[in-house]
Length: 291
Length: 337
Image 1: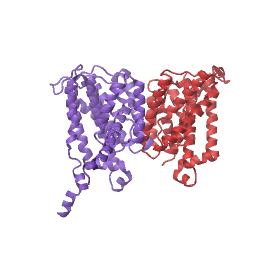
Image 2: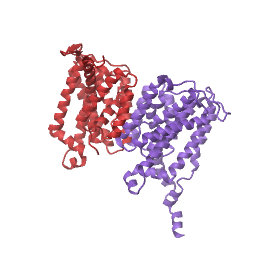
Image 3: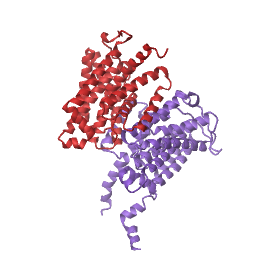
Image 4: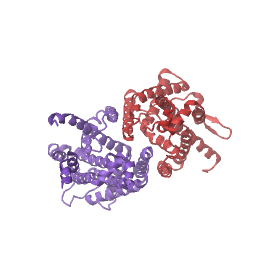
């Protein structure tokens, strides 16, 4: 029976968990692309680096999972802010081609660097015992870790939404996404806004890299392997729209999970075709504003 | 008559009128290519691969360098050409090399036309994503259509009859392949060069520099872009077809992100929008890759990354761009005006 309650709940939970990781990684990409108009193909590389920081501090310093996630976030946020100020900022006014070349170059450097320093093999992240095993939800048993990811994802979505809609800083970001010149002339410090947002987005990617390592794996090629997926999420969700990225992540997460299970051969093909059709219908994405 | 004499004598007018003329140094790449044939008879396989990448980079230069279409998925057309030639030969339908190349070009052009009709309406990230997705779609299709495309393993053992019934391909000593590819490259290059210097080519540069103004002067911007994209796709298809014929196999490496990235790097390394950037970039990249990538793969990747970052930040014209800057500095001293 394909359509039993168990099966549907199973697929939904698995897909939603995958979608939450997609969201946590991609949200920063969407905001930086919407805010700065920068095609940042190195975003997946920051997620990969974050995963490595988390895996390595856990293994070598014996740090627990939760503090390791925090360390990963802080380290990558700080590192990426340095990159943003020193390098990215020079290319904000350049064409897309230069941005693409520059960020592909960064991806290569990061992949090679990680391969030299850590090695080309997969880095497992050992989960704390509390997150292993199955959790009884009453109507079905499900993997504790997936439930944990969904819970974390919901907390992050709510937090981001509140921060975006209810704080001064969020209002500044929204203003700059909608009309950068106007925001600047109102006295918003765009440089600082860019740096902080970029750092925060990369930190989120690092968090997603660590949280998702359990089912996405973690090796140097991570930076390129999932890049197309992150980009699809951003393009489908619309630039600079947190809720848009959230819905797009969930749709693609669930779709990918279901298709992998019932159509293991042509699943990805279907997602690419769907993305193409959608972007032809709405070039600005499902939830983006028409330009 | 006086107006005419002004246009004949004014330096700017002269420069414009003589822009399309062949210069003495334009014969250099071809002399070098023929010299390579005699000097390095043992490396003709590598040379063939290099010439094919030059042709592929030229096709990308048309779309990206001249028309300013930023695409990440140009390998889609290379792969389409390669698979067309490979599948026709492998399934015993057609394997005469020159007409098979035409078939590859036509298939790639049709894909270019159909995708161009829709994706050239978009710009920026959406355009990038669409080109990327179309390439990924074709790659998945080639991977899945196992009966036709050989799936993950690709198609091996493609037999190519002699060119014109006279010159036979020898897989161990690819002399014929080299010269055959060189001839096709020359023909395609002359075609692209003529097109670039024609009024049509000028209008492409206009679109790249300022789309709004080209709309304002009444140029059919979208149609010109679509034509350019289609021709560029056809030439990429020819390059792919040559690759299939020269290697006698086709696999997924012909239409993946790796190949799309490689050709992009070759073009920007040499200098895009300069016609000869493809030659310079392909030689620089392929020679370095040939010696470094197998011995020190990680160092190669690191170096490539650094190179891209440096080009994007400081040397947007690539090697030819640096050469032009140096030439401009050197020239006034030689002939002060």
